[in-house]
Amino acid sequence: MGGTPSTERTYGEIRDRILSGRLLPGARLVEVELAAELDVSRTPIREALRQLSAEGLIEMLPNRGATVRSWTDDELHDIYQSRAELDSLAAALATDRMDVATLERLEDLCLEMEACGVEPDRDGRDRLTELNTEFHDTVRDAARSPTLASMIHGVAQLPLVRATFHRYAREDLERSGNHHREMIAAFRAGDRDWAAAITRAHVLAARASLMNLRSR
Image (cartoon, rainbow, N blue to C red; front, side):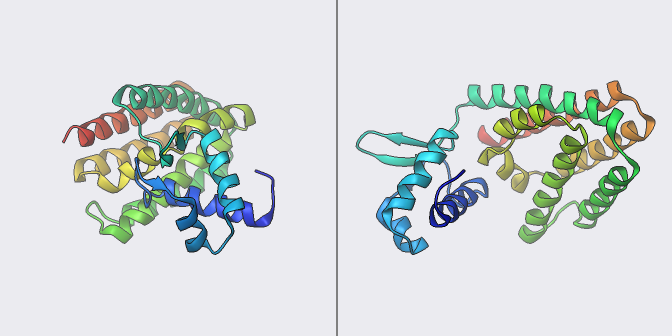
């Protein structure tokens, strides 16, 4: 992001708290409190909040200061629709450009996710989230399209998108794992249409799970 090391460290810490779900949508970000917690002056706090606001992760509201951004159902519907289209395109490109080492890494990630079990505890879900993120990042990297990767990054790092995995029911986890296995089968077969179709279904299924959770 540029700036001083103190500002970059502060930005990274606050961003990580948002994306990990430790700071929930609607949470207030008070400069003096953050400065004390992170042992920095208020200047890097202000710079970090300005950057996070530009990324759409927080809102700067008059007389209320900074708060973690909340998302409406309509916004999330559109976000996931965008992800479905972009990720399916990445999967199609990756099918044509993926090497054997990448396929083997995807297989390893699937095995590690399956080792976490279908009813993991909190630590297991934390690990599942990390592995799931790496799986999809690996596919996107295999597409070898920096422009597409940048577009996906803008809609794939939202807190609710990542935190939802921690609240998946058993059937959601099983379906997600089956989708990952089918993606790998499509990549091995060199079938870009199959890879795109299952990836799109995977993202839309995640949207359905999220909307179901929000309705409870």
